[in-house]
Length: 262
Ligand SMILES: [Zn+2]
Image (cartoon, rainbow, N blue to C red; front, side):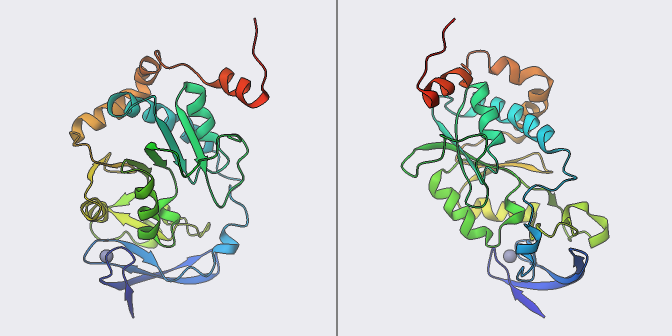
């Protein structure tokens, strides 16, 4: 009872079954070659996505603030702050609005969500994108390789979040990240999988070794990368944003065609 690995096409081996959405007995397959863990074909997704944001997700805004601080610092040190950025699968547009408020030229796209907060800043495929951010989406991808290929065509710098495991996949009751009751986490990556993907796309990998990762053409010392992430939430993001002009007012002027006076 094995399937083809969605990342490397090797034979992925059945490892366990778990109860998803409190009723479906779902098989999980682990690839010994690239370390990727996938569920059987996810037939339950319509049900899993009946509400895009779950009521108990109290950490939603907190995560966005934290990400904004980290991304501000990484842009300052490694990217051209004057270029355009894309928040891929940007949901309701919270992160795009936050980054524009700080002063970075972020755009939104998401085929599955309604843009509530970043209207007027939809991504145009003609735009040159310095860096793509993709938070909380890799674990949702039905076809991760296809998705990564799409993202890579937009930019070869990809900053993303997904919780990783090391070695053998944890048992269903040993890792909250399976989120069995929500049923949306169907692609799970090990550290080995990230290395495999970086090699495949000929990119360098930087990672906090837990949940925050960068694929890029830039060779960045990983200790340095992690030091910046730590400092970002200790005030460094405020310093790096000092010479960046917030777009809150200029976006208002652009969208309303009115000048702010006084
Ligand atoms: Zn594989």
